[in-house]
Length: 400
Image (cartoon, rainbow, N blue to C red):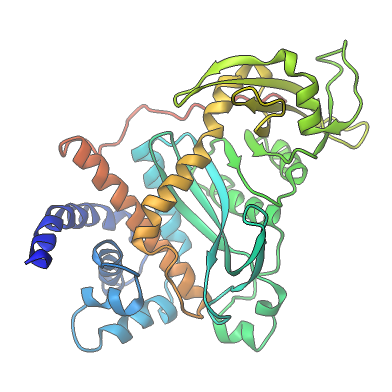
């Protein structure tokens, strides 16, 4: 009895998902060359949305017809030669038009795995946990607003062992994939969506441990991209004497520098709380560098040292706008937990590199469907898919 009641309770949600997927599919799956591929893509997304528990290829296959459904699902994901990047670009274009995101947000995540055989699995030390975790190290590219975040791109950071034959050939890693640092990974992801042929510019927010913040800042500055980058407390900076001539220009760690200028703190009202922050014009090393940025430090309560530190291309006068963007990684973390996890983003356990990319691409589509279904439900079924004509991103002003 409880099972049938649960099934009936899910029927409106299932109906909303299928209706939305029917509307979205012609736009998102247009790049798939065959009708059968486009149909299987829809079925796969339905399996991610509707299947209970962990989303394995076998559980997803329940959406397919026939006794050979598991083999067909495996072939479609791991072996069928459809490209995932055109689907991701279509997804990003749709999200930009329909949801008016405020920024691109890039965050890494470690996906724990048992054993060593799933694609990309290695040992990763996580400072926030103080221990090493066995799993995949994936970087997500999200379009985010204060209301919702949707993943539109994913990348695996691979160690050298995965890039050497015969393992490389066995798991299907293409010849263009190389070992890369976290900042190189983010740069490539940004270029794919913001560069020539991309889907549009917006501020870039990077919230990641272990990234070379200065390398990214120099790259984004040279490309004219507005940015907000989380910076480590020990990152060496000095005040910009052209802007603050009465203060010394000794090079100091970001946290120490912000603390020494705490008398310049000002109250700022954010949507979730009232906080105090300081925005300081700074110059990055080496001496003679002309890379001018703003160091934003934020305090909560009466603690002497700032809790959060960011580097941005924005002018110090844009402090409220910058703080608004620094909240977007929290939206990403929330929606990854509440939505992505439930549509199987972490669940691919196969050894196929193309298979992982196709799975997370379709899981990103499922994430979008789930978010839009929630918005449609909250609005009584009105206007969820309407384009917000005339709505533009408020780009973070550059301070350079």
